[in-house]
Length: 258
DNA sequence: GCGACAG
DNA sequence: ATCTTGTCGC
Image (cartoon, rainbow, N blue to C red):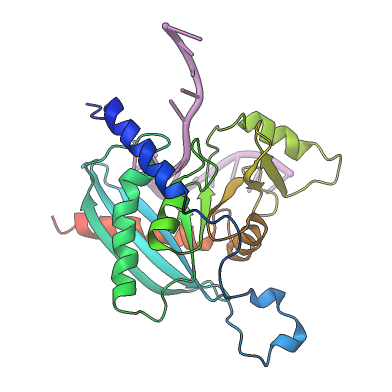
């Protein structure tokens, strides 16, 4: 049943290690946030972050290898969808914790390539990925993988914590409860190694379950957090949430044909 | 050896 | 990941 051999895992680790050399962990883009512009910038010809992408996959219950991948692009200001595309595929690669990219990245790259190939004006300036960035056993999760291969700034969004470098759910909970009464909505995730791997964010008022933000490619954690906050109407950033909704819808619409 | 383990 | 409406609580 589990067709994953040790040889294949070693190969995957090698791929991650090679791609990781191309990873850029600081801001590397020409746009800026509209909310961070100073008054004098308004008349100047500067590029503002407008088109933010989100990707997600949904799976069929009856055919477990069948999945629908969706790419949406939102206008960051209105959080309205300006582009969406879905692709139904049959996945042959199993899900192995730590190697999500080998299962999901190919079809997501196809969606991005398709958009880029036609020089689409709404091609995302930044992509949010459901799955982690450097918050990962090898420091190279799906968001990094996709970012490097597509050469686009990416942010990783985890809806549950991947236990890595000594990080644990109980530790996160304690850190939130700490800080006396100055209840923070965000805490840095510093592993045993001393490296900051990401941040846990209580993205909506009064929520107790955090999302886990980590950098993917070509962005700093501070800027990534700013953008994630701007994208959150609900707990999960609207980019990821809409990609999730649309991929499920598309899958169900295909089911009704058969 | 055992448990934990993004989606 | 997949199913799933209403409902309980602040």
